[in-house]
Length: 521
Image 1 (spheres, rainbow, N blue to C red):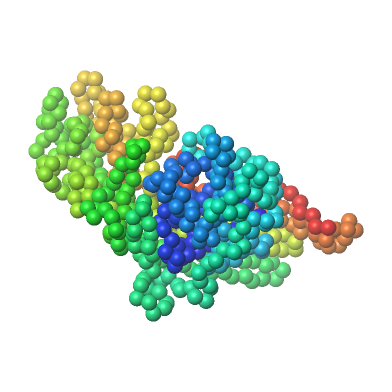
Image 2: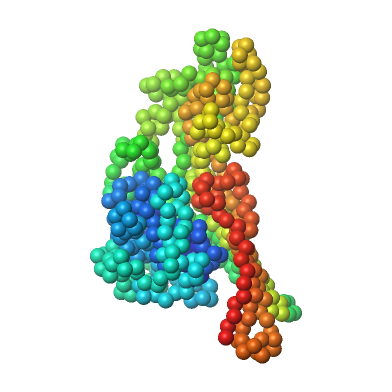
């Protein structure tokens, strides 16, 4: 087991990536792997062994090819951040093992500016409920289930090579700097040495070179004291970072989105882009019957914006017309899908987690010891579109209407031609007429942008160490009883069922209660 601090890992990786000019594709892979590790950690205890993860599962999160994924994996290995063992085609998924920035010494997470080295012959403690080899199911379409297998401390016999083609042995990992050579990334974006280069790093995105300017800051405060016989400790850390593409050797036209061969759409890089930015339309209420000349032709009145490719009806979302082009005047459209002509879209938010914080509280008295760990994100936007967010989103006929989604726009009596709004202050657009114009109503807009900030009580542990006088007769050195609650409570404005850490509607972060005895002979 390894005592890992998730926030420390994120902060140190961001600094490491900037200093070593780590490609963007490698960063995306690392973020997904650390997210999986954090999802299944028990408090600060993370299993530091291998995890089996299907390539198709990882590729679902990458706007790139399998070749780009392999390149990202190779880069992480060469940087000393990852061990990788190829799987057996159609039988065994590949195995991944992260090298953490925290020290695995059983005394807590200690910050380092480079990843610690893990040998393939590691004898790290690995209890039955946290095996070194975890098999992630191929069958679930959204999120892998964990199926523990026998705990092993070495590579299984059917896995013989790492991503370099060698038997896994990472004792010779070489990081090209030491702690005394590092510089502090500060809000000015300047380094502490005399070089003219800023903290920008060169990143390869989908095979094209990009230069990214990353800047941020971090604050950490810890206090430990004692009042009488009661000892107490308080810790608080806060960090923030942002990134901007300052140079990109591709996409000279500034195309905003592209479509992959499988039909999925992803957002391109372009010079001047703030990483994580969310483009969308500006909400301007709902169309009402007063916006039309009559209810037979449904012709819009002069000055009322139309929507490219759609015929609006009362109850449809109306958007603000931000610019006109060759398509027409006062028409809502996506323009040329470029930065210079995005149509009526603008940047409405950013999904980069901002103001990451962690709080640790502790107290001890006469053998009792209480530890509380809380974490959260102070600011983050997210675009979430599913059946928990919008009424009858995936199928207007054969899907349940979930809680709090019943306030959709309703006409007084559509059957008899009365399209006056029965609830003019509705939260959601119309569903009458076979959910007409759904594609327009639920396009990305500031109206339905989610606030993804959250606060979570991650772990509460209470333990009691029995006095020596009680246990010496039993020839014991130490006897400790404990009870621990994981994921005690989460506070978020997201719909219930969506995890604010992963922004997904899959397996929840389980609340678990564990208790036991630690006996030392």
